[in-house]
Each structure stands twice: as structure tokens, then as C-alpha cells.
Amino acid sequence: MHAILMILIFVVGYFFITIEHYTKINKATVAILMAILCWIIQFANAAWSFDINMSQLEHHLADISQVIFFLLGALTIVEIINQHKGFQFIAKCITFRSKRKMLWVISLLTFFLSSILDNLTTTVVMVSLLRKLVDENQDRLLIGGAIVIAANAGGAWTPIGDVTTTMLWIGGQLSTLAVIKNLFIPSIVCLVVSVGMLSLALKGNFAEKYVHMDDLKVEPRGKLIFFLGVGALIFVPIFKLLTGLPPFMGILLGLSVLWIVTDIVHSHDEQRQHLRVPNIMTKVDLSGILFFLGILLSVNALYTAGLLGKLAVWLNENMANLAVISFVIGLASAVVDNVPLVAASMGMYGLDQYPTDHDFWNMVAFCAGTGGSILIVGSAAGVVFMGMEKVDFLWYVRRISFPALAGYIAGFIAYCFGCLLM
Image (cartoon, rainbow, N blue to C red):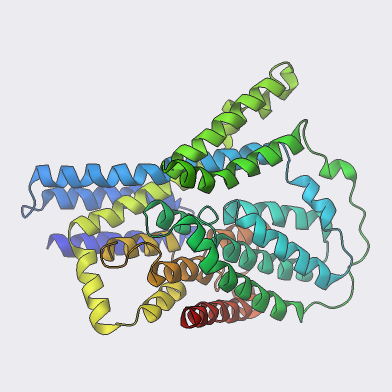
């Protein structure tokens, strides 16, 4: 009875998370409520003693806190760069009149930028810049769709580019150099195939548009903060390799350095108080962090109850091929959020069964990261694109979904082919 009730709460909560854009109920609220209810049921289960449940909860909280602190530090660094308008000068590199050239340059910039930043922030930055450069609506939407695909593909191949890859990295399922080596080629194949298909719909040149330089002006010390912030993010995997300390300590080190620099360069000017970290932190998306907390706690409750173990057994008996399981996870991430899917995978399969850098973890990282592009509601990048440009769900299905699916399949085949050659 306890198991059925817990599954019911999780399914209903999951459903409300997927339709957030319709209900307007923040998914963080649903995730936290879902987590608390699941743990209440777990503690009420007489089959488990209070001490065992408390020990499990404390153990899971210790693991989750690493992800939460990492995200808090990373999002703050990105917001510091954003408030200094450090991304604005990138626009000067993409003022092309050729539609196809604009598409390819923006897609490649997004791909590599997303490997450093998270895909949500990268999408916000690139779509914002695109709106300043392109007036023609349909062409802009097509390029925006390419940005979603590129952001998700770019986030999949580095340990700091997508929250699901970060979760696997912090959890020990993936190592820094191995994930880059194994997933870069599948990710770039995914991008090239998808953008190549989208480029067929773009012909000719854009009408000439004058972009006023004041629109692209950065705040004082904006370029310095941009390079320091990006450097801090890139340094995190290096920090982990050099010291062996958890990644959240590396990101907090980078944040502390950036905090000191911004205090020094802005402390003498009262007009720059909005550029100091305490003010900037009020703009960080804390609801997103609380969403991850709720989801991970919910999945851990299912794990503690033994439900994920039973699901793993069922999958192994009925869908024994790991490649098929990973591929299905990617397709599922087009419909539902990839964070709980990856969290569930981590709960179902232990490192004793599939050790660090096993093909299964690489496939899960790639599939969960790129599969979300197939539908506009399948990733944070797609949802923010839908909100910024008021994109219709069916328009995305007609114009973007097939290229995204083709890229996903091509990238997956590229990974499998690479495994055969090794």
C-alpha cells in the first residue's frame, strides 16, 4: 500500500511538472511537495525503522547538497557575467546578412558556449542577441530552434554543460576527460545533422539592419568579468583533477575570486552597486535550484523504498539491451524533464554494476541531454525559447522536431559506431 501511494504521488506530481506552462504552477513547488509527501510515506512504513530511514535521508542529503551548492555557485557566476552584459560583445561576431551563415555561426557559438554555461542560460543569451539582430519572424524562429538543439547538444559533452551530465559527474558515474572524449563527436554529429536540415529552409540574405552600438555596450569591467567568470567555470574540472576535492568546492572558489574582484572594481562608485554580488544574487533563479532539490529527494525516497531497484530488474528482464534503455530514456526526455529520468537511472543502477565511465552512463548523458530537443517542452532550453518568442507547440513539431530527432539518432549511432571501433 505504501509503495502504491508513493508511486501515485510521484506520477501525479510528475504530470503537473510537465504541464507547468499550462497550469502556471511553478514546478519547484510541485517537486518540493512531492518530495516531502514521499518521505512522509517512507517514514510511515512500518517495514523500515525510524533510525534506518533517518540514516538514509541524511546520506542522500549529503549527496544532494553537492549538486545544490554547485548549481548555486555556477548560476551566480553566470548571473554576474550577465549583469555586467559580458555576453553583449559576442553579438559583434554574428552580424551576418547571409541567413545560412548566421544560422551556422550562431549554432556553433551556442554549442561551445553551452559546454561552459548551462543550456538554459546559453539559450536566454543567444535568443536575446538574435532578437537584436534579426527582425524577420519565421527565419528568427528557425534559428531559435537551432539554438535549442545546439544548447542541448553542447551541454551534453562536458561535465559542467548540462545539469544531468553534472549530476552523473558529481555522482562518480562519469569522469572529466572521459566524458569529453566519448561524447564530443556524437554531440557535434547531432548538431551538424540537425542544423544541416534546418539550413535547407533558409535561403538568401536578411534585410540590412542597423544595430546601435549602445545596445551592445557592456557595463564597466564587463569584459574582465566575462573572461574571469568563464575561466572560473572552465577551471572547475581542472580543480577536481588537481585536488580530488568535490566540484562544488571548485565552483565556490571561482565565485569567491569573482566576488572579491567585483567588490574591488565597483566599491568606489555608488552608481555600480547593482553590479556587486549581494545585489546580483537576488536575481539568481533559486526556484530552479529548489526544483532540483525536490526532484532528487523524491527519487531518493523511491530508491530507499526499493522501488527503483525493482524497476531496474524489470527493465533488465524485458529490455536487456543497455543501448535500447538509454535510447528510450532520451525519447522520454522529450516529453518529461530529464533531471528525474537521470536521477532515477542513477538510483536504479549502482557503480558496482556499471562502473565509472561505463558505456551506459555515457549513453544516458548523451540521450538525456539531446533527446529533450525533440519537443519544445522536453528541455529547459526549449521552454525558455517558447516563452521568449511565444512559440507554438505545433509549429515546433512541424519545423524543428524532425531535424532534432534526426540529429539525436545520428549522434546515438555515432556513439555506438565509436564503441565498435574501440
